Amino acid sequence: MKNIDRKELLELGERLLKCPELGYKEFETKRVLTEYLKGKGFEIENECFETAFSVSLGKGRPHIGLIAELDAIPTLGHKYANKNDSNATHACGHSSQCAIMACVMAALKKKDLKGKVTLFFTPGEEYTDIKYREKLIKEKKIRYIGGKVNMLEKGLFDDCDIIFHLHAMGEGKYKYSLDSDLAGFVYKKIVFKGRAAHAAVAPHLGINALNAYALFNDALNMLRETFREKDSVRIHGFISEGGQTVNSIPERVVYECYVRSMDPDALIDISGKVDNAARHCARALGASASIITKPGYLPFTQCRELSEIVHEEMLKYVKDEEIEKGVPSMAAGDIGDISIFKPAIQIGYGGFSGIPHGRNFLCTDEDLTYVKTAEIICDSVLAFLKRPELIRKTARSYKAKMSRKEYEDYINS
Image (tube, rainbow, N blue to C red; front, side, top):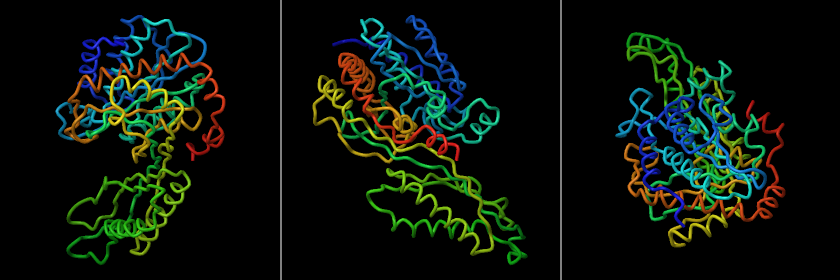
């Protein structure tokens, strides 16, 4: 069934693609979206955390929550990079998410809905630009790094029965994906501290912080053989400060990284091992290591019952063999934190070429990326609303993976 205005959707997608902004700075993105939605007769609700907002349709139950992410990610060399904002680029496809979901809401507005649908536009999903976000936290404009985490703590998703999200996929043989669970991660900033000295005249008087990092990096490589396959562990990072001057022994070296795993217990265990390696490798060379660990995002487990409904709708547009099913991903997102408390799904959609987060990531099949995906989302929402008993049962039987107190203790740790 044709629900979506193709021309309108593609034009909105193009506008959003060309105004990429980093998290909590998505002011132009918000302006474009609110202008479009107000033009369709929507009232803007729940404006908070700099750029977050929502729009709603209908009333009562079931209450379906949709999510679209506003932010871009720094990507050097992309043709649409925002040179005025750390080369922010929609190299993760978030602009297409927003266009799709906004046009889905416009299509649903023409329907007689038996229930309620709320579309939440969420800022700051990409865990980046940390200094800016720490500044916002100090100014009490946000409390946490991730946008959905802030919105979750504010209780904005509490009334929803289920949550429905989508995310772009890199190029490959599949057009869509279902039931792809995501990893969780913690963020670390490790500062190795040594002692400066003249690198040529008196290196023996210095303590080389870069050497301390190098020894730690070797220890990380040795730790990797202890990781269990089932835990799907990744440790990846970069040196954000590697010394002060060529002519001095490096006194301060800063390494930032994520520790990822599909298993929360493994994540905590390995995080501790990384800390031990950093401290003891530094100490072995007379240096020291100070470590800041911030909770990132929790692992995301898909709600299979909801995915089955979406699968039925997908088959109206693509063949079953074009849908990838049940393949876990080491990617992470703050949708994982929502899934601690709510039954949620995230579908993957294709039509892109290049590497996600890379300079060559672009939409090359507009009908797949935008039009078919929007039709699937629209049909799926209507299918959810036609199954109120199933949605009610799914919501009531869902067991939260943490209590609110446990979650607050974790994200504040």
